[in-house]
Image (tube, rainbow, N blue to C red; front, side):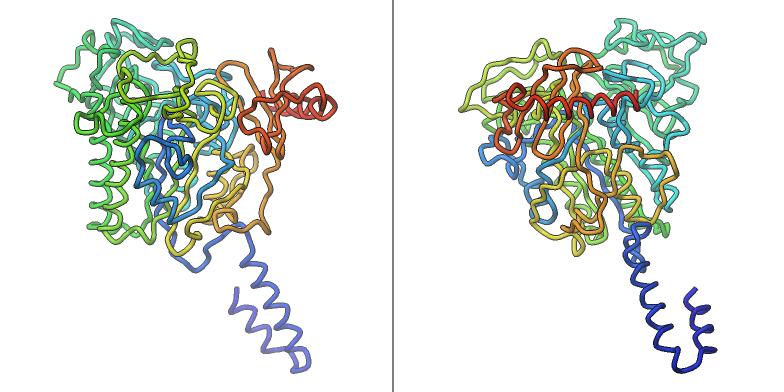
Length: 513
């Protein structure tokens, strides 16, 4: 295009030359500002996305000076990059929050309107929906994932029936009719990943590599005895899963370095930590003042450090964009030394409501836990680092959600999002550079707890609908700027504003459900 323009210029008369040059310069400046290609003329960076499971906003020392966990590697990552303080996982439970990350859409647009994926259910993501790894593969990336998927996978059976335990979280005969010789479908490899090692839903227990089951997680809560594979499967103790996926991720990095493929990578590192069961390795037990839960957070930070240090050792850290987030808040209100590590259940009805101000508070300073529509359930620590590109040590109060990752990275790598894709995401890439001009503006976010509890945040105000959709007055209204702990319900004295926000929530849901 530039050569064509220059040839045309040569035919112009001298008096018109300056005018033409102005037009050319204007064109080039406009191109530089284009959101379609943020890094024109540079090599595409590698991308490492680290997605913790049930980690609270206040678990990281860099977010909570009172934290009793130990997170030196994540603290360092925050010093090297941007730390967002107003980041949301749209839903306070696993599957729907992961759906938002992978698609740029709120999960109630999917067939799974509420709750998490149960054993053996088919993909929550339709074949037509653009995913984060698909978008990056289209841009020329190698896409690999290690860890937890929890967005549905179809398992073949020997009798053509649905797998035993379908739609449940636990079954004594789990896996009894699984055909271990046939490939899985509808899983990560069918939604954009070119290599995968991990599981779909933990209580299914099955570890698969690409599309083939190769092992099983072992824990007292999981049952695999009824399965009868023809060949021996790997048996992986649950406390061995985090070291395993870290080792495999490092192996990938080493292979990538030694066998250049002229393609950048997208590595999705998705540990099952600190989700219960709290499978803390012996060497980390008792290392913090936050009990087994805090020890598990410390162990997670340690293995994240192993991964980051390997990037450094291989000389790849400078050209790797690193993003860290959690899929929802912690299920614990407080944790402390001496606390039992084996007796917890994954149910909101069993949350210990005791608040000990001297104990560790995983979701500090916010109210609520996993499953809750309160801030403690839906706030996520979000850190992004890209050496030499993103500012170091920046703290950003930009309102952002996991939905925004796909469109923001699409802008970075020059991929145009098709019409109708990523409907609930915004390109907030300039915020990662510490800028606000020329950026799509997220003015509001919809969040959901477990079941049918919804809330709508706009600016400093947050309204919570009571009962079921469509929501009617009264509700709850909080000024998050003055009351981040959501202790003072202002609905009555601001009923006109509250009803307006409630109507906007209803309007969104009516268009999306």
